Image (cartoon, rainbow, N blue to C red; front, side):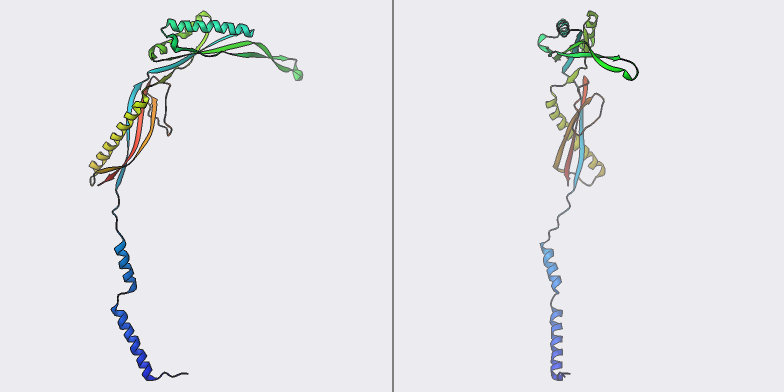
Length: 260
């Protein structure tokens, strides 16, 4: 066992005490690092925003109509069926012209001819078999009309079946209605929907208080929905109704404003 001389022990004690005094007079290292880090951090205020949805709706009347009639003829012979169809299509086109539809708005399509069969059963019991027997031919042709005179063509589409009295087999198909100025209208509708969004945001802040609108931060122009009149149906792809004469155009936008 080694004995430390008393004189050295007291010297060591004095050195330890001196070290403690020195440490107590200097700031802790952790405090120094934290204070330096705090000087580098800049506290940013939380950005306040408000997001609202605006919409606009307008009633329009279609200014273009597309309509077609199906003329058909049947006969035991293919050539006879075609000849009957050709005669009936000419009569249909003549009828449209007498109703005031210009020749440049009438578009006869190409004719198609299909074989017609009937099922005949031969034999009895387990030996009974079914056979398809050719009975004749059916020829068919579409006569289409495209016009801006919507009311006239709409009336003709209802009255064309009068040709049945002349032994002409004709079927009126449902008209399709379009609005040719829809592109310009969409721009106007999106502008109106954006104004509606701002008005809604201002009214909300006026009622709630504590803030006012700042600059525009984001705008999401939604799809345009063209619906039958009095319908509010919406779609992510956008509706484009062609079944009704009168339509409702609905535009929706999503807008984000900053607050101050």
